[in-house]
Structures are given as structure tokens and as C-alpha cells.
Length: 499
Ligand SMILES: [Zn+2]
Image (cartoon, rainbow, N blue to C red):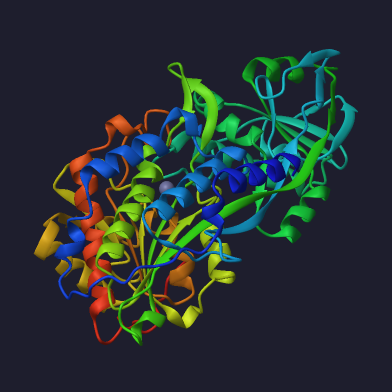
């Protein structure tokens, strides 16, 4: 918190304007979206994305000062674009607490009296205060749990989960390992064990650096009650195969003194607006949505340790700025609200928080046009989610997006990823979801996954700037249609969306 106070002081001191309401100028009304379109410039998108996805931004991880720096950058750019603050207390920001738990650096683990290195030899899967010393009981299979294991520490090889992640799914090993650990440790915990040690199998070992770093970063919760509940859980450790072999030996001794730091750390939604030009309809908002955070710094991959998140989601962050400039030049009848959510990568936290604590009345939200990753893959293809049942919640909104595309951007629109049974469950993985669940008409613009997804190779120089410009235009033109229509897009009868 100390750091944060100093940080706020610094940005207020250097940029007092980003916390203050700005005067707005009147812009001429125009039915056609073309005057605004000229304000969407590839050169601006390029300049902005190379800044936001630069190494200096250090991957913008929520729960660190790097995310707050990115939030301040976005607010400053929004101000320069002439957008008005629409966050809390007449600022561009809506801060909210992340409840964090992280294993403290002075924690120690010993194997047979020798110190083992946390996050290299051994990982504590969920941060839990632990003080214990024991000889682990070796289990060959889960069937071994028929014996009395109460208050014993058990060690076992990691088993594949009952349900493997879909073949070819993104981040496959990560999903495999976490689901294997969860399933196996839950089964063992039901036997009343004191602690669980799982020995990484060859699959988990192949990417242990990557998902192990995620474990090292600890837990993020949006709800305080969940955070407090962590205290009584049974400690679960994952060990490397090498250390696992040592621990499996008869009479081996394991001791741990794990301390956990629990603290709150702020994340921020950045929120700005351009008032509509129609005196009645300006009370209603077309919402343009994205997220400014990404994954931060991790164990190096081919010498690069910064997850720049250029496509994910600097691409939409800079698109929103460009759409803001367009709206400012040629305001729609309805107002435009721009939200750069925080902590999306930690579980859609900013959007969940905003929907619960919105700075505008929920009834005034006409539609949410969310974007996530809009600058990669084949130049002629794009996807729109929330466009088919059961995810579609407004047929009229989808029609507006499809019409905007056929009039202007002419992408081949792929809706297959919106299929209920699509293995990636892409619809459930971005910030429109909490809005859709709150019955706000919602669609999701994306150019889908690629091999650089969530790797240090998601860099600005790999973005197709031409395509990013067109995707920005598509989001803008769709928003324009939503803004100009006399009747706001209707919500379909409530869809049966599964979790
Ligand atoms: Zn994203």
C-alpha cells in the first residue's frame, strides 16, 4: 500500500488533469459514421500499441504496480483524445481491491535436512501457512487410500485427470496439470490427510516453468470471504521428479515452514465517455469494452521474460482510444462509454466489479461491444461471439454488427467459435460475460487464438496493423448503429446459457 500511495501521488502530481473533469466542446451532429471513421488512423493505433505493449510496461500484470502504470497511461491517452472522465469521484478511475495471498520469500522447505528451492524444485499449489515435519507415506494408486491416512502426509505420482482437456486446446499442459492436481488432491484430502505431495509426471514437467510461475504468483480473489476461507485448507505441494524420487524413499523426511503474505492491492478500471448529441438519448450509453492488463513477467522463454500482451489486449485498448477520437469528432446520438477493465487475466475481475458497482445506471447500458485480441491471423477473417444461441442475447445487436461488417469492413465472419460445444469455450473468456449475465445486450469481437497467445512472443511487431485498423472500424461502425437507432437493440428472451 505504501508503494501505491506514492504512485498515486506521483501521477496526480505529474498529470493533475487525468483526475479532473474536462470541458467538452460541441461537435456537429451527423447521421453518417464516415466523418468519425477518418479519425481512426492506423498511425495512431501503431504508435499506441507499440507504447502499451512495450517492454517498459512490463506486461501489465494485475496486482502489481505495472498494471497501475498501464491504467495511468490509458487515462492519460483518453484525456488527450478529449474523452471525459467517467470513473469514480470525477476521475478516469474505478479502483477496486484484489485480495492477494502469496507465499512469503522467507518460507523454507527441506528434504532430508537439505534445503529445497521453492519454485524450482517444489511448488505450494495454494498459499497456505504451513509448519510441519513428517515422513511422507508413499501411495502407488488412489486405491491405496483405503488405509487410515488421517493426519498423514502422503506422496504420490501425479495422475492424469479423469477428463483430459480437449485435444489441441490452448495452454493444454497448464490446464492438464492444474486439473490433475486439483482432482487428485481433493480425493486425498477427503481421507483427512495432513498434507499432499504430488510428483510431477512427464507431461506436467514439460511446462512446469510456465504454470509453476502462475502458482508462484499466488491467489487473486475479488471476494474477501473466499480469501479468508483459504486459511484452513490442507497444504498441497507439487515436486519435481528428481526431488520426488528422494522423497519416495523409505524414511525420507520432509519439513516445511511456509509463511503467507495476505494483503489487498488495487486494480483499476479506466472509464471515459463522450456525451451523445441527442438531448434525450444521451442518457443512454453504448459501451466499448476491453482490458488493459496482461500476464506480467515470468520465467524466460527463449530469453524473453516479458509477456507483452500486444494482441491480448493492447490491441483493443488502443482501438478504444481510436474509437474515442472518432466519437469525439462526430458524436453519436447516444453517449459512448469506454471501459478498459483491469485484472481480466486474473478472472474477469474488473468487469465483474464494474457490473456490480457501475458508475452509470444499469438501465442506461444499451449494449456492450467487447473486444479481446483483434490484430492477428488471416487478414480477411474475424469472429463475432454472442452471435448464435445460446450465447446470443440480442438478435438486433448481432444484426447491427453483421450489417456494419457487410457495409464497411467485409470480413468473413467466423461464428463457429461461438458454438456451445466449441472446445475453447471462447465465449466465456472475456469481459462481455458479466454484462451478458446481467442481461445487457453483449457481443464479443475477436480475431481468435494464435500460437503466440499467452507467450512472450505476443509482441507489437507481430500485429497486423491493417487488420487492427479494420477491426477498430468494425467495432466503431457497430457502435454507431447502436447509437443512432431510435429503438435500442432489444434483449432476446433470456437464453439458457450454461456456466
Ligand atoms: Zn484478453
